[in-house]
Image (cartoon, rainbow, N blue to C red; front, top):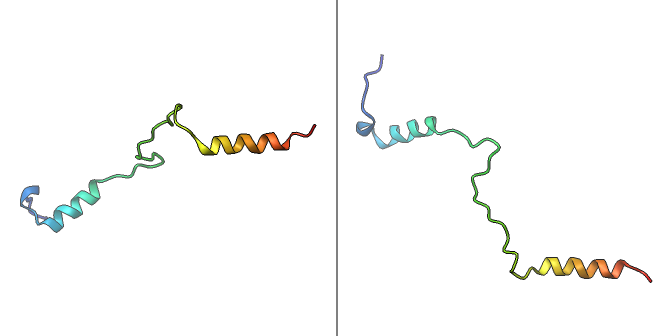
Length: 59
């Protein structure tokens, strides 16, 4: 049976191993923060799509 050693007294290497074992996964959740686009900002791609659609219409 291993002797109990407080976390603070463990070597950095052992502390790192213990932290890695305790650390879980995010699963399907992506932790990156996302913001919605600013509706007042100019969007080049939005204008490009509009110009492509107008050329497809034949009179």
